[in-house]
Image 1 (cartoon, rainbow, N blue to C red):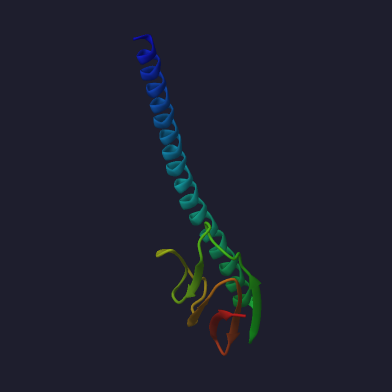
Image 2: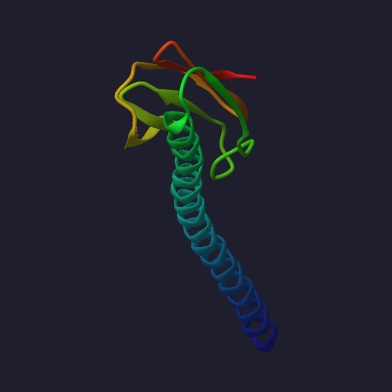
Length: 129
């Protein structure tokens, strides 16, 4: 009889260990996904601010001008691209982060990573380098 209690105790201890391990893994998964979402939003905002700064610089320049900028390869561990129109939009995994452009002239284009913004004849174009 005593051997059966020892076997039952061992099985219960093993099961409790497995349940605890699954709980820790699940909690870590939830925590890490929240970190990636927050990181994505922060990095998208930083990319937008870099692009908006270039538009502010080019807006102050008289005549035609060109500016090249190196942006991060990813935002929140995901690929992204920047679109310019009425707003500067950073699109990451279907989520779009938008900010109003500081210029009244027509703006078009999109790109990611290393981009070039060209001011020519009163309009702006954003594209990959």
